[in-house]
Amino acid sequence: MEEPRNIHDLEFIVRDYECDLQGVVNNANYQHYLEHARHEFLISRGISFIELHHEGIDLIVTRVEIDYKYPLRSRDRFIVKTFIRRDGNVRINFYQDIYRIPDNKLIVKAVVTGVSTRNGKPVSPEPLIEKIQEYL
Image (cartoon, rainbow, N blue to C red):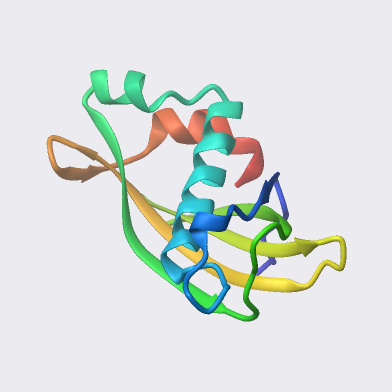
């Protein structure tokens, strides 16, 4: 299977309130970073969650796998790199890696699986696929 290729980068900086008492980013905050990067990628491709919802289509995360490699600390700069691959008729996998800047240290490797639904039932994500086809 061919390795997915990077299609979108989004840079962040760790804010103090995202850290726990040990001075590292709380594990739940990594999911926020990953989600924000996915949303920004979709928005950059003209995909509006509101418009899809009004059409009766909702994009739902069904699975998140995260490997924590190294912690981030307050004021660390980092980048989320996003890759995607279609998985069957209804699933799309977002492969997301977080790297610290400037040393390019791998912080997190994640795979986030999503589906599109209509009235709560899985459907083909064609409206989404049409706008991101060049990346699949």
